[in-house]
Amino acid sequence: MMNKILVIFQKEILDNMRDYRSWMTGLFWALFGPLILGGMIMLLGSSIRENVDESLVLPVLGAENAPNLIAFLEQQDVIINPAPADPEAAILSGDINVALIIPPDYGEDFSAGETAKVQLVFDSTRQSAMVDINRAQNLLEGYGNYIGLLRLSLRGISPEVMRAIQIEEVDTATPQSQALIFLSMLPYFIIFAIFNGASPVITDATAGERERGSLEPLLINPLPRGWIAIGKMISAMPFATVNLIITLAGFAAVFRFLPMEELLGIQIGLDIGTLLAVFLICLPIVFLACAIQTLIASYAKTAKEAGTYLPFIGLIPSLPGLALAFLPVKPELWTMLIPTFGQQILINQFLRAEPISVLNIVVSAFLTIILSIVVTFIAIKLYEGERIITGK
Amino acid sequence: MIQVQGLSKSFGKVKAVQNVSFSATDGQITGLLGPNGAGKSTILRMLYTLLKPESGSAQVDGFDVSQSPIEVQRRIGVLADARGLYSRLTSRENIRYYGRLHGLTGESLENKINSLMQLLDMQSIADRKTEGFSTGEKLKVAIARTLVHDPQNVLLDEPTNGLDVMSTRAMRQFILRLRGEGKCVLFTSHIMQEVAALCDQIVIISHGEVSANGSPDDLRRQTGHENLEDAFVAVIGSEEGLE
Figure 1 (cartoon, each protein chain N blue to C red):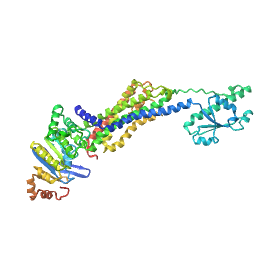
Figure 2 (figure 1 turned 60 degrees about the vertical axis):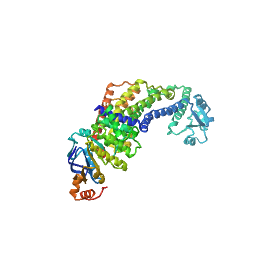
Figure 3 (figure 1 turned 90 degrees about the horizontal axis):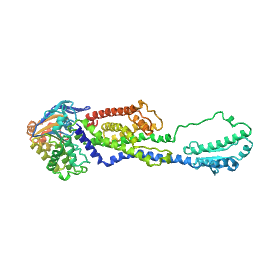
Figure 4 (figure 1 turned 30 degrees about the vertical axis):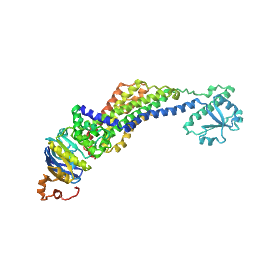
């Protein structure tokens, strides 16, 4: 039995290795994740850094009305620019992020000890301007509080009177955990790469064979059809596994060679141990990916029809991983019961170097393998039916 | 040796094959003749175990096609209408794949491949990928693949379909050669001349049923027509779908 499955396996490997174009396409998907992630880190990382490091540039209209305020801002490392004549238009057109308008009666009100008004002009829907807007608001409020406290002190009132409560902010988000949002997207890309590594091979070996008329003669050979299905399915596994390895190596390279320290302010290391653990956790998914796609390909009438289903099949199990980037889920046992979802949580835990329950690993691997066996069994049943020949 | 008793098969409401019985003996060429769509290919597909008979039964060398398909598959070589070669594999690799699936290995397999290639005069295309082969070259590879395990029963579905004159001649000589080796040869055709020229026994199929069965002489006698062509038309009832 093993011999003939091996014959099928060897032929499919040889046949598919010669089909450069289709496995190169599969390979592209393996690099897709690391390239996208690397690009995102570069873009987002550099924009975060720029905003924090650079001085706030604040266009001001009527700077001459409030020399003390301007001096205070300049002390706080703000670069004061003359604002355009119509600041609102300039903000709408995106030329500036925020503008300060100091009316002529500011000095009069201020000297009289009354509330002096200034206008901060901005567009709160512009995400890219939020850093500048918040900094300008904070600085102005800071100046107002500072002057207010000075006035109370002059009147002999303790500044404490003004502070009924004091908020102490304790933010548990370390720079590392913020950057880990990026890591949460990893499982999504990894699973996507596994599915896409297997799909060209499986499409060609089942739906493609039927289309070219070579499946019918093949099924006349003296071996149970189930063995043929199994041989074809396992011939896709090396391709899926290679894709998994390439994706992991790609992510390791991204984290190693991009200046993470400079871009995100943290160091993320994917060491060999973590990579190996993630690889082993994903191996049952290789089985599942090959089994599901064999089932689809033996159901589809043509390679083209199979080609329309397969990308979605790869997308569905990887979607929870994308959600994980935004909705944290605790690694409870029930999550391990869902094939591919459990692995995505486990991968995240490994990347975050959290303590991992061995039970969770075993349960998730076990259920994924059970599901794969069930799916393989259904695919074999399809192979044994007449539909695989007649297409009806 | 192929025996068929009361074989029937429907696809949905269409009765493709109804109560077909005949037998094909070793050392003889048996032709299934009938118009396109008469059910010839469906009969053949049941014989080579791809389709399951609805009722009736068929045996190859005594093994039932439904009960022991693997034993049947070991004893038949099939040249299907769709040649189904692997275009990224060479001729030799195509033949070797089927040889290995039949359990042949090593030197005996390679020797067998070489002798088939010599027989079919295809050494020049032995190690080329079959992509871009001419119809005749593809046919040679497919024949070698069909015979690699030296089957006692050879089933050919429309073997001369789409061939030019030279290839058709070569194919006919090849079929006669198989008979000379004592094989049981069963082939389908819708071409009267071909069947008349080759067959020891003719089974005429129309609308999924056997309308006549016998040697060319039997058919002439039964219908009272000296000309075989007239005999066929008399049996089938019309000339539709014949050549």
